Figure (cartoon, helix red, strand yellow):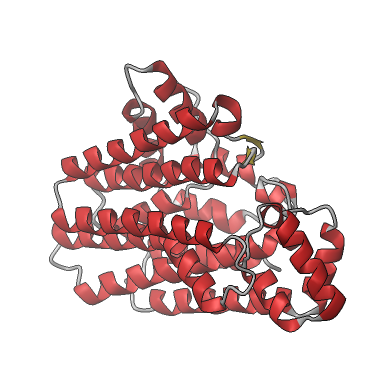
Length: 350
């Protein structure tokens, strides 16, 4: 048995939950779909098999890096929510995980990242060309699995999503050096880059459930889709916030990485709008130099401007929206698990 298949969902939690936030809520979330999650974990290495050793080596390295696997988790919870657990649901969970993993490989190359989830990125370990090509392999393997599922509506959802995710990456790249980036433009980028795959996970799982059971209504699918969208928006806002006020232990990367890459995220966009004079010049200098050398000073400027608190409020607003959409869904253990997952996200910023 491979290292990946011998792990339980709780093991993945332990890989990333080394901070002091109470993880009981999160453990309970995985418990709701523990058997399905183990099946998915057993299938992943089989579906990563390739006659090209380097493809398999890099694929396994990035997938076995741990992480909470929230996106496939949402697929499984949605299937349970509508009482439509199937082999296709497990395949769909893997599709979502492979799409996400492919974007990580490409993101790390574009961002020249050296660390993810506390260890070397694939591009740092093997170089850029193999990382990009293995990302392409994961995309194509995901689409092979979609063909096996055989649902054209799901293929449309996920093909549209991958196209928009790519556009989001290009938008973010094009915005580097645009120090007047608006909040609306920023939100458009994070919707494409992050929220869309969460939304696609719940939406495609809802569509799959509707194809399996006449009891699943279109309005319910709309609600679970909206839940995924708002959860994903909150997830990125929280990550952007923690990049300035979190820690390497929590994030699995260095605090201040966004600043080092010259990325304008909501905390710094708001701070630029709220400050002037020397403080604003300090922010602009750090962005232009792509330097986190004076991170402590930058964090103080962002915090004193009120941008940290405003970003927190924006994330909590998305959390509340996600909670609202859950109220329209069946009351069962899976909805409770989704509620706990939402609470866990909110807990990250308190």
